[in-house]
Length: 415
Ligand SMILES: Cc1ncc(COP(=O)(O)O)c(C=O)c1O
Image 1 (spheres, rainbow, N blue to C red):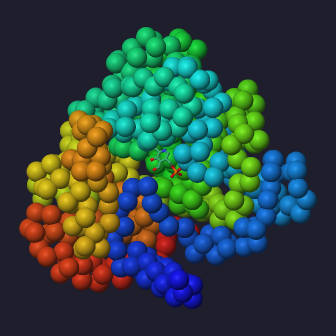
Image 2: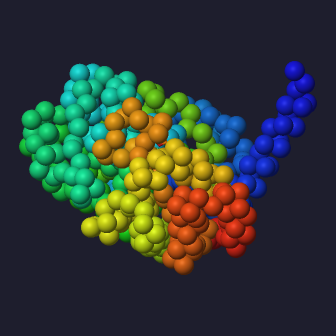
Image 3: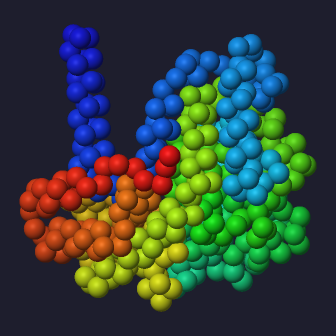
């Protein structure tokens, strides 16, 4: 093994990747985004080399006064953004924030109610994910496939019947706000805690363009910090009850997070400040773009879900491509044209078909962050149609994509 060659290969892979995904692709993965240049710059600091067990100003190690300052700034700005009494940025991912919630409010053998994976839950909420690892008995809230939302009556029935310790709303297919008020009523009847996985929609919540989970009935929100919320990869938790936070804290440290990857924090602080300043405009445009993209795809004959509901009120567009070569073919062929999205299970798919499901999921957050608006979304729909419907050689379309992307390489909505 020639290690020098390997290092050169790694360096080449990174610079080629950065040029390709950063400047030449239309990035439509709904869970992705980019940080602003300032956040990106501050991501690379000596914070990366340090350890900080515990809470700001109550650490187990020395040398952390500036880390404390930055983490406290994140907490203060986050509390303001989300109207929360407590906020914790130590979970190093969204998935871990969900495991922390599952560990805080339910124990082995307890019932736990969440949407199913084909109905939009993330794998962390599933019996084969964190909920299963935690040994919880998972029961599913059914989806109303017309509404592309939780079926309120049936979901309430599941909660009342199974008397879970914990109910979790939110998910990874998330077109419309979940009916938290109604879930709260059912959760109250059985004494369950109601949590909300806001990983996908956190930036829309921060920008006040989606639902406000804490005001609508959720006890605690767990989320990623890097999907519609355009921060560094990581997680957070927030809520309003000190009682709940008392249960959560020991599950973060010492149980599940020893060191919380401190280099994230300056970038997170910058992103929070940007969302306070520009978040409303950004989130509004993300949703307008998703609606414009959905409408154009529909006009090109694609089977876009939730037509009767205006397609979407979030950053996501879900398309049934079972008549267009199915999810895997679409996603792989579009990648050849530098249009990046993911295949996705649809609510009626068997979970075992996840390698070639009948849907694709498209997200508008990242391209909105780079300044695209409705006219650009119409063009994106046309490019997708040329590849998937007209079967134009994707390598030809790729040249148009590269040309188009040249005007959208600077992040907007930032300092
Ligand atoms: C709803 C939901 N929750 C949790 C996660 C996990 O987030 P992370 O990748 O930050 O662990 C995801 C990831 O896409 C998600 O969609």
